[in-house]
Length: 136
Ligand code: SF4
Ligand code: SF4
Image 1: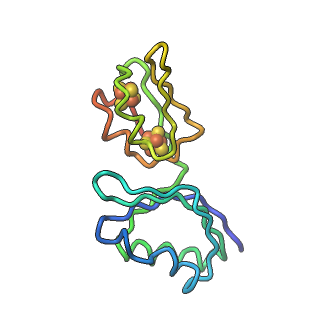
Image 2 (image 1 turned 45 degrees about the vertical axis):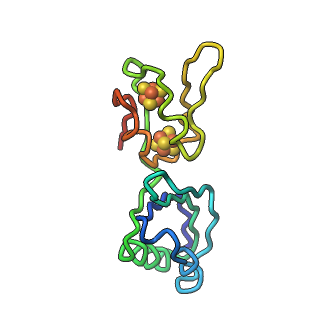
């Protein structure tokens, strides 16, 4: 059976320069499409991937990534904003790798577009009043 999943990979600093994803094609016969890649200020690498291949190859590839030290997150997680807590400080705007937040220059209000969110979790740590929440 062929599976196709969207996942987020978090690379610790020591793995950022290593050809980890390349080996997914070479050793596990998987196809991938990079939807987003970035390195955060803490030097953590973040990559949003669409990974496709036979179920057994997919499972082996995920196992390889996990053993290599990559943290994997499924996109089935949902991030929401608690509007009552948000103070529109704007701290989330620069930290979000997919541009899910926007500042209205006139009202100085920050909007959140859930459809652009890939559930990486970065804004949850960065939001001072803890307005961003991860739901399963
Ligand atoms: S960091 Fe938190 S409080 Fe600040 S604008 Fe973003 S969601 Fe609102
Ligand atoms: S979890 Fe936050 S920082 Fe990550 S993509 Fe979603 S809105 Fe952006």
